[in-house]
Length: 285
Image (cartoon, rainbow, N blue to C red; front, side, top):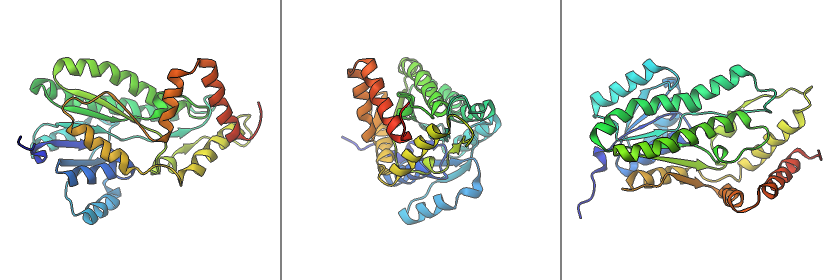
C-alpha cells in the first residue's frame, strides 16, 4: 500500500504564538504536513521560530486575527495562493476568563466569545465551501473538557466551549453528508500558558472573592503536575491521519469525570463536583 504524501496536505493552525498551537505546528511539520502557523500578532513569533529551529522544521508563519473577517479572508487567500485549499483546519486560538458569573463584565464575556466561539465559527465557514466542493477535508477543534462539564468560577470560559461543542456536533453531521469531517479534542488541564495568561475577575470586596480565588489557586497549584501538551499535538496528528475520525476525543486525567457524569445519578455527580469546589475554596457553604 502506498504511503500518503503528507506534504500535499495543507494545514492551517490558529493561535500558534504559544501553547497547543505552537507545539502542534512544530509537530505537524515534523510529521510531514505542509503547515501554515498563524497568530494575531506577528511580533510574538520568536518562540515559534525558535521551536522550529530546534526541531529542524520549517513552515509558513502568517498573520491571522480570528475576530476580524478581513484578516481571515486575507490569511485564507495567502494559504491558497501558496499551497492550494486548506485540507485540515486546526481551530486552536482562544483564551480564558476566570470569575464568577455575576461579576464577569459583559464586555469581557463578549470579547471571549468573539475569540473562542465566533472566531472559530468564522474560520470554519471560510474553509468549508471548498471542502464541500472537493468532498474532502477535516476541521479539528481544540475545545475543552470545560465544554462538557461546568465548574464554579468558569462560567464565561465554559459557555464559550459549550457553544463550540454544540455548534460542531451539528456541523459533524452536515460535514459527513458533504464529504468532510469535524472532530473536537477536549483537553483537561495541560501545562500551557492558557492557565497563566488568563483574565482574572477578582474583587476583594465581592462575596464571590473566596470562591474565585480558590478555584484559581486550585488550577495554578496543579499546573506543575499538569499533563504534557505534546500529547495533544500527537493526538491532532493521529486524528489528521485517520480516514474515519471520531467526533469527540477527551484527553487528560480529568476525562474520568466524563465517565462519572455519564454513569452517576445527577445529584451524586453534583455532590462530587461541589466537594472538589469546597475543598479548593477551603470553606463550607
